[in-house]
Image (cartoon, rainbow, N blue to C red; front, side, top):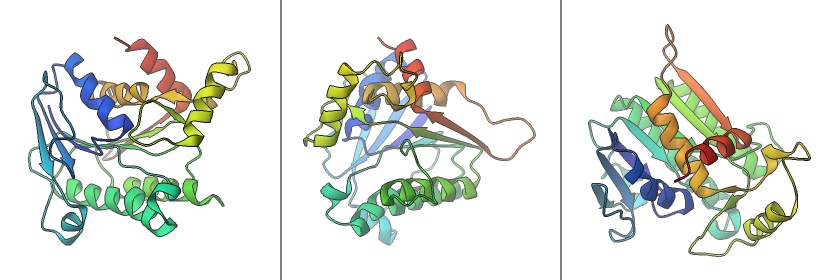
Length: 230
C-alpha cells in the first residue's frame, strides 16, 4: 500500500510514522511537510516532500498518482493559529483541497482526524468547523471515508497546549470508565494513529454502495488502540 500523510510532524502524524514498522502491508509513505528533515522512520520507506501550503493552494503542487489512501492529520488550535480565519484555513480549507485532489486522482480512501463533538450546526466555532469539513468530505463520496473523533489528545508536542496537559492530568485522576464516561477520556495520540492504520487495513467499502463512511468515536479509538499496542 502507498499512502500520503498530511500533518506528519504533528502529534498523531508522528505516531503514524512510528507505528508503520508494525504493518508490513504499507510499502511506502509520502509525507508532506514544510521541513524535509522533520519526519522519518528508518524502518519504513518514507519520502518527505517539502510542501509550501501556499503553493498547494495555488496548484503548483498536487497530490501524486497511485495512492491507496490519504491520511489527513492536519490540525491546530485557534490560539496557535492566531485567528479563527487562519484556524479554518488549516483545519478546513487545506483538508478539503487535498480531498478534492484525491478524489480527482481516484484515491479510494480518505482518513481524517476531526474531534469529539464535531457538528456543522454547533454554536462552538471549533466543533462547527470540524463538522463542516466532515460534511464536505461526505459530499465528495469517496469509496471509503474514515472519520476519527478523539477527545483531548495525550502525547508529546513541540509546543505546550495547556488544555491538553490539564486533560492528561484529569485522565489520570478521574475513572472515566467506571463512571460511564469513556467516550470523554483523554486519549494517547498513538491510539488514534493505530486506529487509522487499522481502519486502512481492515475496513472495506460496503457492498452495493458507491460511498462508505465510518466514524470512530473516542471510546472505539481507545479499544482499538489498546488492542494494537506494541
